[in-house]
Image (tube, rainbow, N blue to C red; front, side, top):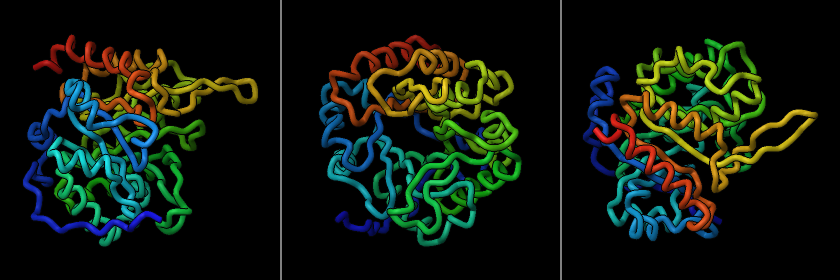
Length: 309
């Protein structure tokens, strides 16, 4: 059994004024660089995040910690925090599509934990992380309905959480093979960003999965998307599979990103003026299997003028 997390209360966080406009808030956010992700137990069979930080700090500038409050942090995440290295807080138990899910108990505990780990901001997939009450057996990840009402609900949640926590909140496009609703995924998140006056965590692996599943070309929707809202990028491996005569991509966080993911990453990273962080989600792979992709990410970033500046 995992112990239920009980936060250590800390002083309010000093950071960007949550009531200021996006341009002012994003200018106050730190530039975290290239980093890695983790979640409970990932280090048992995958990356030793502290060893990677020690040996290749250029690849492990920060740690994005995936957290649900019931289980809290594992020893690897606590050791990273104890060493004073930068972090972000990726929630795994909040339904951004349901504003009523932001109850006072969750918001208070999540904000306290984010302050405790020194998180630069909060982020998490928009949609549903649980069905029904927030219980461990109800955990899932369902995408949002791609319509205006759903986008407005997510924007309401982002606003409430930003104001209550004092942290910038970045919604992420989730992975799925089936979406309901008439909006393109990027049009949906453009509306969220406009209504909440927020930035976004754009997962280009998830975007590649969506574009294929929806029958779109790789860059459909990007021309009209406000790319200045992208504050963080995620890159991850995926595996192709077939079903009912069609081919799809499974978001399995394998060691090698797909060509589609690389193409989207290289397109976006050169056009996102407010990009502050890039995460390679490869936490359950051995280091030797992911270094080639890590080096490609680092090389691309080093060659990007806006990123260097």
